[in-house]
Image (cartoon, helix red, strand yellow):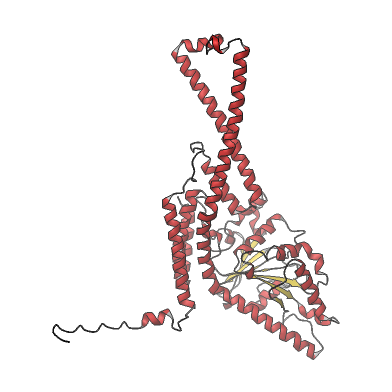
Length: 499
């Protein structure tokens, strides 16, 4: 059963998408079908949705260490000084920058993002509370929203991150950083060319480079050496670039584009005319490439959302359900093993007591000291009920201990996040007291939900075809032109008797 507040937020999302991209409104319906399957399995709660796991607006995040020029880069791109700049750390919050049609800039608290499904920090306070108890109530200390009238922000969201230092970063800040890297369509990682020894930033480079190059979506990361104008003062400016390239190569980045830029408005004067022209030509070419890539995310966004829909649907059947089956098999095996130990040990104790009290099997099955129980039928019934209750209680203990052992294994195997939480939620749904340990299929998994998943995958393929019809025309003729061409009328059939 879908939570009422979530239903209202989904309706708001559909209303905004209707004005921008009606195709994505249909995608919302497919995500809701996927939600039914995930709720049935227990992978998400009633107040959760797979829709909230992705960013519905094109999202570009700018990461990097302190004073790498992130805010200056954003101001130059928007042609509006929306962010404070300086040679030292001037901002300690993640800032979401979006368009404001009213023609004014505003600063809004983090709660504006935390409660809105359309933005990338929806329910971030709950995530912070899980990693650092007490921090969820301090959401305004971590994130904020800024609006800006720049036309370059139409249908686009930028995130400016605070200075990144993996050595000193708090757990909550690292959690937010990983979250926005997962959601972003494009991640610009800026480094400061003024730092002569990039090797001193080993932990930071490890988190921003080594941990990203092997990701499935690694192509969305762009690495930029910013403030290159300072290198013009060096006897050998190429050595600055070489030092950074070697540092990145040590983290595994040996391929891909490495951009070199600096701010035209904040550049230091370069006296040598030939050197200045060379630096400016390289800067302008790289900035043009970066801006082109940034503008491209509007088209890529729709493909990303549809691709995520298909990926999540296939993951449920191909990954999550088999994982649940494996967890249930391990739970059943552990329960039976513990049952064997408990009841086997109890049986040995009873047998020893039976024999040691001087009542061998030849003297009768019931020892004399227990005979009074079976003298009356009601006593025998009460005795058997108590025995059955005790056995059930011991069996439930064995189930509980086995479930706890499996949960600990899951916590060790999967990093903290939605996947681990979903698997544990679904697993505990299957270990409810009324669920038999011999059930093969996970709770909520059956023909109905399989058909729903097939339907979701079919929807995603249809959406991709519609996007291709909009953006790709291999025949040389767009689908719109074909649709507008008049349908030729059929030739009249010859009358009977005519040749």
